[in-house]
Image (cartoon, rainbow, N blue to C red; front, side):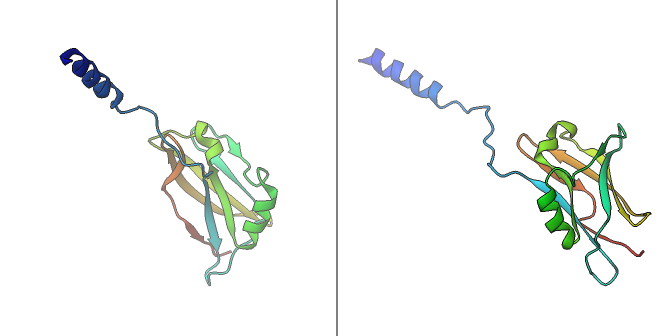
Length: 134
């Protein structure tokens, strides 16, 4: 009987070890930035892109989801990163630049530091709202 108790105690001890697995939510995160004029009206950019500073790589997020992009533009909101880009981002943060063009003129050039955890991307530094005077 004493042996059975010892075996059961060992089984219980080993079954209570914590797992190294991370539980992630099922959400798909997309970071956006708002571009407004000096009186808080949304600014509709002709085009925009994200540039990874360390490599010079240009990322065109407008074409990843044209329907959502068209709705966001009306409100002056633009994608800067999403969970599909986790491979481009380090946990400690990666520097990007958001560029916005209206007509033939670049009116936005803002830096962002984007990081990640085991599940999602996150904004570590950068403006959520950009005010432009053009």
